[in-house]
Picture 1 (tube, helix red, strand yellow):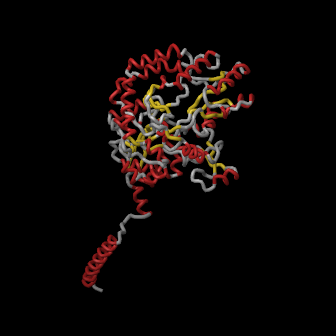
Picture 2: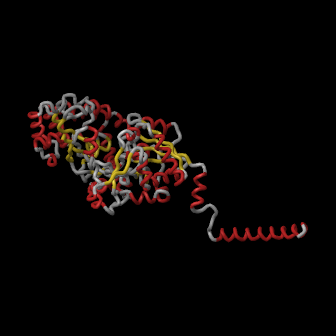
Picture 3: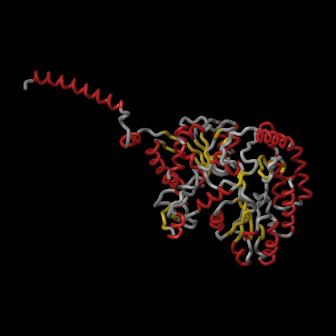
Length: 516
């Protein structure tokens, strides 16, 4: 065939091919088929530049943080196109640091917040956190549906959700913590000991029989059992008061009785003399102390102390805003990538591999799976809150990656350690289900009208509270002094304003989440 015929034939062929290709493309688009979908698209997306998210967390930086974060980023880039930067701030500095970050408009996307550090309610009221309801319906729906709705109730302020809760124990659960050695030695029925007064005969026994042991070891952080939701310490509502009467805790019969009992124990030599100023010294032999607990807390305390302890609850578990807001993650109101931030949280809450990578570090380096007892496995088979194995931390490597697990997400999808029972999270779930809401649960106090008055309370409580709580001073002499200073500072104004807000909250038509 000559070149002229070849060229003429080739030109017509190209026209036909072009027309065919255009028809094919139109057909593909009409069928809803798009180039790059499916597995090949995922591979293509993985090559795209990921979105960087900055997450502030409370806790000390770890040697192996970069190693673990590299693994995390490789995984989440392929899943949701995100690269994570984690900024850790030490316990003592976290609240102050976060206020600086928020007030200076530093770049950040997520942060740890709670009722006890980087205060959740205050940050919401000043507009630092993003309202999350829409994001939860879209990017966070799977996570939202899986978390106990009472956590979401606590995450609401003014009818909208502003934080993603870390699902763990939900209620306030103060406990007496007993050294098992002395419980066993003297046959002490610790499970029947609940009130402060229940302790008395056993404190006397230990003082007589064990002169080198402190019967009731206390530190400056101790507070006597408080049967009250202290909404703005020392003002709040007692747990059994359905009438929602606002009170000063130091004017309640229960607290006045407790302080007198503490003084009695101190004078009897049951309490260490330096209690009002002491920091915890693990070398001190003690019979009993007080802890803020949860199911299996005794396992952690035994590990930290180096000897076995057993526990008994002081009172019925009550759910308050403070307890249910014990660990949360918020999204910056000014984040450039709020959808991706919510996608990340949803992935952490629903992806077993990612959740445990953040929790424990890298399998084979920081931990390894171990075989669980066959009877234990059979007992939890088919339960969504239990796995059929346990994990063992590497004694050396785990020291280089030890994090507060509840900072990064919920606990119910984390593996249990070899010394823990397989049904650990089943038991915690049952604990949560059985926990009762305090009458004040769901109420938020707007402090702004009486902020000046309330600001003075902390200094007054520091001056008198530690000494009174530990029995170091006579409540008949010092309690009137404390209450007089609170009165002069304007505590009645705070109580009146809180009562006004409580009454309005009680009588209003609520739009809160109904968990019944």
